[in-house]
Image (cartoon, rainbow, N blue to C red; front, side, top):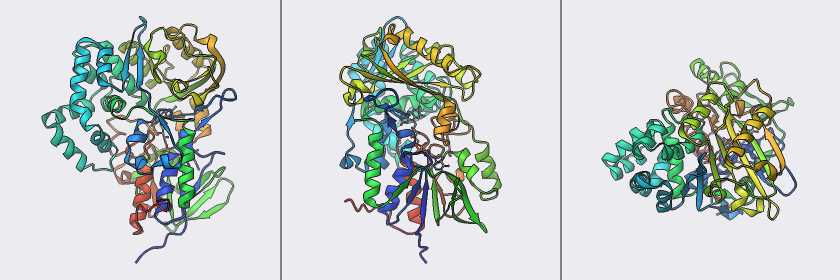
Length: 512
Ligand SMILES: Cc1cc2nc3c(=O)[nH]c(=O)nc-3n(C[C@H](O)[C@H](O)[C@H](O)COP(=O)(O)OP(=O)(O)OC[C@H]3O[C@@H](n4cnc5c(N)ncnc54)[C@H](O)[C@@H]3O)c2cc1C
């Protein structure tokens, strides 16, 4: 017998919530997305945070997964106005001696930038991996267990496949030193990409993050939406509205209500109750368990979610600039992304400090120069700058002192930077959590992604396929496999699981 689902609530209008809503609506339901913030978008928003005419990405900025992920690709958001820019110089990594190594879309140009044996090592590695980039990414993103992907990869890569699996399970530092024959400069360049995960370069599991991001740099680029990340949200909202989903902002969910062990709806902090037969939560593990009645989940699972570990927080600075950043090295003047840390030892020290509760003396920075490739982000001749560093979620220093360390680091690699600053916006991890309670401690990945405990079967074996033991409750978001980043996989997965359970058709766009 079919169970009719008339009232479906999605908690959170980040990209996963919006992707879920599109799928639910396309499957014949009319979901209501409840969002606590005044605007939808979550960690994929952009705003004029500094001066009029300057558009800044609040959190996510470079989204290769969004173009590689099947969940996003199949939505064809380009039909809803989304346009991408894909920079040809993907990333530059400057060193303190005024030189830099660049990741280009083109493998040959990248090998030339690496030089000598390191360049040959990279060409050899990419010769093996690049033809299988799409399968590699789809395997990592696929619902567990990913059966077809590993078989296809194993068949294609043969013995090399096992070798790559070994390297990717290890640290990015070990992986780099192996493929670059001990070259520490080249290894620093590669390791900079693992910073996005918040894992130190010497940590097991960082190999996969750093390598996959660099492979994506060649295969798909690190694209940015024209007009800011908000354009991605606008396209998702437009698609959702056409399919029949609704979004309600300023609606913070306090409780997922269960009566007699049955899910019956949600209660907002205002006290309003909204009846629902099914709920998809896109919040990270801590806030999710905080919304449930004690005993709603089996005790072991509840304990697991309560003990979920969050990692370092992102300390974010956005600048309105009178001109481009005066980098000492040539390559960063062209690159959309710059990894500022310098030598491998400096990168490791900064990451270890952040992980062990210290604000690094010389923070490692992820820097975005979106306006270099998307002029719509700033008035003519002017530029935006996007900077974040991983710091502990709580620290004793004042926020301005942390900002001063970040700015000193920028000056080290771009002397005279301060003179170009017209306006600045600062967001410390505690402020991020206030704006979006799902990002506990400003953690950008919904909980640490260490190989030992939190990466595999994320966040718990019972939840990896988006269902929960509480009938009618489904989960998505950065704490759920395959984790953080803008790829929409768990949003789609949760919606598909719900539709499947109610024997509704998973994908039928009214939009065509
Ligand atoms: C500084 C920073 C930089 C990043 N850079 C990148 C990048 O370059 N590329 C990339 O791919 N990824 C990046 N990420 C990660 C990426 O942004 C996130 O993993 C992803 O956007 C998470 O999407 P989501 O929909 O799961 O969650 P979110 O976007 O966090 O959405 C959750 C939503 O739920 C809402 N909410 C919270 N509590 C409640 C409640 N009680 N009731 C109702 N609503 C609630 C929130 O306001 C939010 O809108 C970055 C993250 C940060 C912080």
